[in-house]
Length: 435
Image 1 (tube, rainbow, N blue to C red):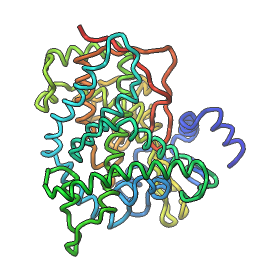
Image 2: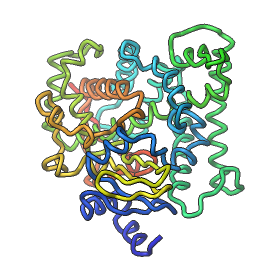
Image 3: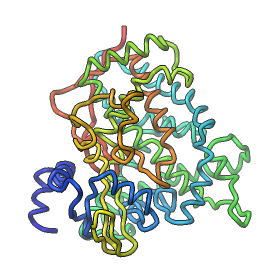
Image 4: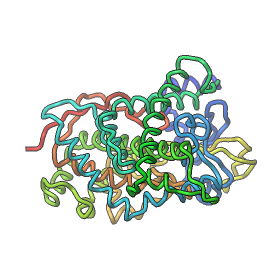
């Protein structure tokens, strides 16, 4: 790596460096990602071209395609081509609108149990709490399993593997997972612990032989083109992918949403008043959600400023030229950065201001579809996007029934750009219970 580039990374941090590149090259410019040459793409037109118009000319980045495989196996996030499309068709029914709507009661119950137990005048580690909450929700809705008792241990194992995959993707000398060193041993041990939990669920459900209507049942009942059932390994890979992706991004988005509400008490009061006028103190139901638009607007605006999936990277399968004249060689990486696009003044006036009204019914249609893409775009758009949006709306609305959040310190919460944009540290918030 160019020494000057390395110094900038050390001085600015990765997010600061991405922002600086976006300012210096408004339409895109060269970037190094590990040992790979790449290009940063900074216009909505080029993002549409890469993700929607010409997706078959690219594959996912090595960070997902290679370095995340110890955790995710050959699941939806890592697979490519025709095999990926077959897998997507297999999993899609679990996220159909009518099925997702039935998950609302579970989301509401788990959120209520979480916030009702936050003590008055306490300082809460919000990332740990939101991770526990979303793990509980994904366990119950997708696998009909109670994961709360093991949530902290599961969260630690997933964190270990996210750090491992991030180190591998950034390293100038990535190692094979099986290579004998301390970090690899720790990652393999974390995979083994998660595998025990997932394979245990698979074996238990095969023995029960009951269709519970959840994702696990769909995977176990699915048949390939030759009529064969999926192997335990295939079921594990899909289950693990949705298990990890189904809680990680929503947990992060919920933390950032609460953090932003804590720093904007006037918006928090507006949301509390809307929830009180609409729902009162009873559990939030799916029928209430259209009458709680501010919760959704806050959640979407938090994903604009702090998108959990903060960067999409694609690798070119062959030499090609983009519509702006950029010549891309086979193997080059294209970095499509939600974090910088969502803060681009070309698309978002006063981009650093937290303003949920950007997503009001009258304003949201004006946002360029490919300038705001927290769930990606095209045929690989996140299959669980509606699940995540409903979950985030219910979590925020339920929180506002129970507590007021405020900053626990004067220090600004910073993002930690791993495979997802996590908050750096425990993301502590001060809690006051509603009277």
